[in-house]
Length: 111
Length: 111
Length: 111
Length: 111
Image (cartoon, rainbow over the protein chains, first blue to last red):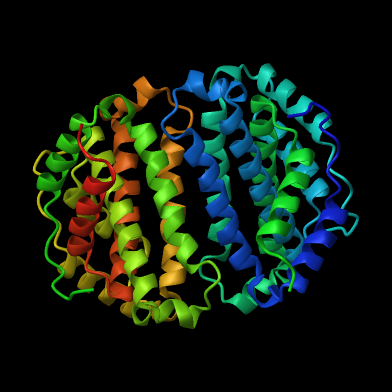
């Protein structure tokens, strides 16, 4: 895959995901509770890719094109549900991430 | 929380997470396999918030300040591991998300 | 479905699972770490059955033959990995369960 | 640790868990959907024990008394929710396990 690592347009993606769900009449299913369940299912599908790999094989996953493609899809699936959970529960992801980084810095002081 | 929903600076966050881990000599632990395990643990902590809530209570989570704060932290935790998995396995998240949205559009055609 | 709910022969099943793995030369993969990953993957597949169901639909799952069959398979999958984790790490499941029930009784005293 | 590995009294444990929940008025929360969420949360807590361990450290977990004790508790937690899911959805665990072993034998024929 690429190496651009462009910023993620949180608000734009959330808006597109809302429209996608509305067009399919999925709104009644999209409670934060249900979206959290769907997210952990995708998280486990990502784990499944690595379950029988050695640490070394897991570190070299970019050299296996099929597995690497699969990993990208599972990362995207977790991300899409994470965006929807945040949207449907009013969490600002970028702000939450910054707050967590501050908290982690206090919890694990640099030596 | 806020309503700005600023874009997420993927590359910048990945760089900061690498520096954070390096300063704590965590690199040997950060295989994609281990990071995937840590990610599903955080995903389950997010699920835990909702496990005994009714659908209605889950939809109204923003009205419970303590729970909403907790949810923001768990969303951030999943996001931080997702960013690290992508970084350590060479996945471009924004590109993977766009590719998955195309795939989902084909899998679930709008009626 | 059945209603016998016979006791589960832990030692016998663990012995059969060891023979099954040995015959397929799977032993090198069966570390407790890898088995734990496989177990959470199966646990999430069980969650997937319920992710879009209402509480009422989930409570009535026995009335949907296909879904009920699927649920039985996922319960079995989680159980089989749980038995293998215990076997490969020297945990006596029946004893651990009794100890946990005592602990839960202290943690949540009856009113 | 122990080495007895006595059979697990499925029906007896399910009956005790029902009484435990009833005494605490937890029944309204115990839908199969909610119990499945609670189960995957415990499954992830078991995964957490192993997340930063090497394969070798995970295989030697019995030699670390505190970690081994913790593992036994998490195995018990997953088991207790698995028993309750089966009970509340009418699945006979021993029968489901036997059926799955037959299916696995067909899916992965011995060489």
